[in-house]
Length: 187
Image (tube, rainbow, N blue to C red):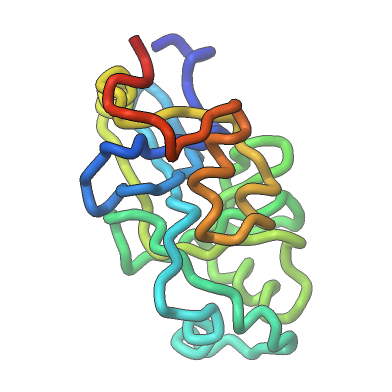
């Protein structure tokens, strides 16, 4: 793939027949995709944990109780002990990577402190772990019809109910994912 074909700032949507339990019916937001591989955060798989539990574990003072009720997502099977915050771009955090002009990925404590204080990004999603692919692996999986890609939709990522994000991400490109069968996809 040349640079213009990388899927940074896009969703990859698991095709219905992708049976891997880590990715069955998931949508991942691709934060980094290049010749070395890809890193994505699954945006539609909530854990049983709320953000308040992470604040407590990290001894972060909470000024806005509403943030404590935010779900914590299972971002993927790699490094599930590490936290990742996908958020609308704002502020200057210690460990932030701009994914697009409007969305960033932050891994430092300071963004969580700002969220707890009510001074963080307007929209955010906190995940434990990430999805990772080695060089050429994601491209091969796409050619094997395991994934569809679609543009990132901030509304899908931050405002759509979790259980509807898989179908909503596909609907952005005019596809009813629930009607797809095995032969559909890339030719």
